[in-house]
Length: 501
Ligand code: HEM
Image (tube, rainbow, N blue to C red; front, side, top):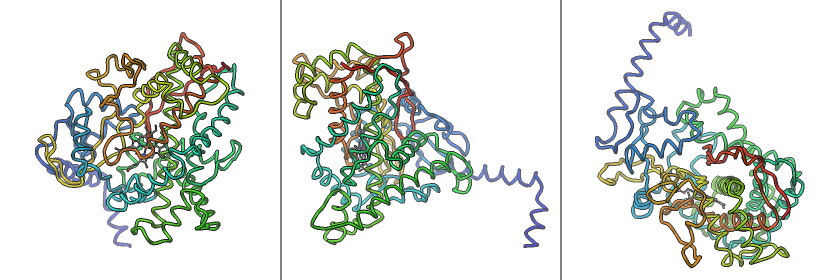
């Protein structure tokens, strides 16, 4: 120890500087010598940090990605840190070629074990961040369970309608005064997932649930590009950043909430009376019939995945929906007229009404296109070295799909920034499809909650428009449609005036 202290005392500032310069040079050499020589084109990287400056504190990364596609083409190479590589894929044909035609090579998730902060959170278990046989088994099981616990059955529709009653009550209280709908959808959408997973919904005054929802909102809002440093720095350094510490704290709160529900289920489990998703998992785990995927660690992460992926995505889309409907009152009025003519006001809209409401369906598609809440999907990595469009991509190269660009490409969409549901209808008022539209992504990793999300969006928007009128506070200064990119892309806070129809 004495020798170490003496050595430390001997070091002066210039020694430290020389050491740092040598370290930077070594990292620079490392960064310029790795990987193939025919990476796709991309912006010139800085020494050591590469193109990390593009991500730094950038809450509009989707616009940066759009510009990169415009400048460098459909396949772009970015470097992050001394040895990280990102391939950005743009244009629906390129994305489909990778994720669908060559899905075998492009459907893994990044191994997060080298990201220091991830060891405190998801450890490559569950569905979203897992690969291989366990991922396949759990994804199949979850899709089946979602179907069994309601999709396609009226029971789930009834649950959604119950939640909607609460939303209608909430809106009734807000009539006539400026109202910010930021939190309007979070609780009901989360409750729908809760009723599938936990077999339980929470009342609007349940403090524990409210607290957990606030934590979830924070997590989605403050993750993504804003936390890039937290994922690059070694854990002890990253933990010096207050935002990173806060993120771990909120993550723990959400996990504690989920853990408590699992413990309650274990205490009351009865294999002959499967109440919900957790019971079904416990039963499968105990039967030992399925593969070794059904471990406790996987159960926790699968539930956490569904809970997080199933709440923010749909509620943020609905928030975009209200925003566009107040910005385009004539479209709101046309949609309401269709609903009132087809259903009236004596009963709530139901999934059976879908065929009668093509304009309403077109409105939802347009909300999803412009909202683009997952602007670059979830990161994929290559599972093998592969030559793609003439470029050699090594195994484990990170791949992002530029979904926002696909939804805003002027070559595909006429006047892409305009909210125009008519673009989705043909001359017979029938819905049209467009291959560039992929809000749930495509291929093996495509969202597994798309059916639930579509059901929620339809019932929520149809019911709200049937009962309420939404207006801008001041038509002279309309709210912004600029998105903020955290884990999802959400609208800036806005207020509106709501009144009964
Ligand atoms: C409007 C609502 C939603 C949108 C726009 C959306 C979008 C997406 C996207 C873009 C992905 C990434 C696909 C990829 O990596 O290529 C994804 C994955 C996923 N989503 Fe959704 N999602 C929504 C709602 C939901 C809901 C309600 C659930 C749960 C019930 C859910 C569960 C998941 C899961 C588990 C994955 C990971 C799939 C895997 O890795 O195999 N999502 N979603």
